[in-house]
Length: 168
Image 1 (cartoon, rainbow, N blue to C red):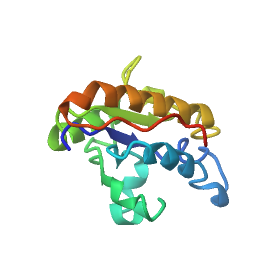
Image 2 (cartoon, rainbow, N blue to C red):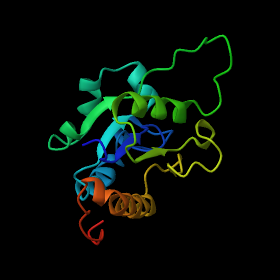
Image 3 (cartoon, one colour):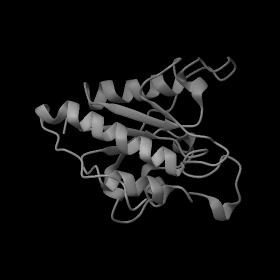
């Protein structure tokens, strides 16, 4: 499993629009799960600020029951002096810290709507439009990126992803 892809998942602006009603919370999550079902080796690590207020077990409850086992962890909460401005690229730093301690050398993607939390032109970022959340075009991009990652890591033990997303 060392070379299995890791998906770092934000919630607000990804699994639902950033500003939404309670009824809309996690309205985009099924679209993400459909893509990831086609990539059974990819695991999810929650990078959302929700991890600072909720336990992993509680966060998993937002996912389909058959998918929850693939939500393997949360990134570490930042340990910064909150009287100071948040360091730049903090979300990317959290992802890299988690990878270093848990899955060194694993391919990864972050699905997030906050470009400023990552280095400029971070190739591991799938940037969503936070006002709408994870869209159909994001689903196609996620699938394509996972196919590419899988093709690159097949020699190290990952299996190929299944076909196109014709049912999205």
